[in-house]
Length: 418
Image (cartoon, rainbow, N blue to C red; front, side):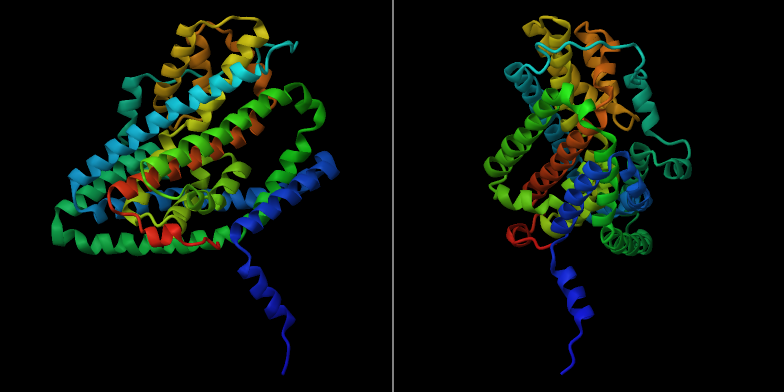
């Protein structure tokens, strides 16, 4: 009997859960960055290739899954009900997030006793007005919106097309089948790209780890720690609490099911870039129907800003403590209200975290130049807030799926191996 060690090794690699492979790449990337320093940037092209492959998926995947999701519902009233629940849950969790960020900063006081100077070199562009946001939702040219990757406009066009295909009945069936086949092809392509994830994550993290030395991190280690602690608490308390109390679901299975998406979110610092992985996790690991996942997740990747809300709460109080400014109860209330509403107002705007922070700081009278203090560590904070955003997207998707009877609890409660 002939042994085939190559085949055995290949089978062994396939049996290892994807999240374990990605986590291994993450740890090895941190070690490579620590040992090689800035020379670890030699691995960055590997990460860039992975990110480019992920970005390649975003527009066709969002568009096809939204159209398929809308047509699968067959009921415009159901879509409206899901939309209201989705946005309501996102706003509620965002308010919780910014409150947790504020509370963590008040308890641990990361800015007290720290002396740092700042220069007015970092500026955030102005957030668009409500009228500009509403007008900008409707694309003048949907092909242009697809080419530029304007997710909000793509969502509006896909919803309109999906509803139209549903309303024309039999005449829309051939087009619906084309989109269903196209969406299936995109899911398969996503699985191919995800096979590269361990290597891509290694390249990305090696570069980030090598770029940030101790001399940059030590003075601001406390604010980083507070932001990360608040992020973990939000996921473990708010998200799992809502799943257990409202959804009557085992939160441990939720945490297991989203691991792939969390690691990609952390390494890429991009909610939209993680969307293909989130869709895969929602359907394959959490048992959410294609229709609900295809509608809720793209909306969440665009407007859900829980992680950014935590960042706002932590950084606003940190800067106030750094400058010796005493904030009143009215100021804290304003931070919560402004941050929650701004999470919708800055949807789809590049540098949304910085814009939201500048809006909050302006409301409570803090100098915007102080943003420069945390600019050097923004990437490290961004990795944490993106992970929270993605975890929130998947939690809301799971709750909405459960409330609509479109959650396969057999899949949800199964032990996830990939």
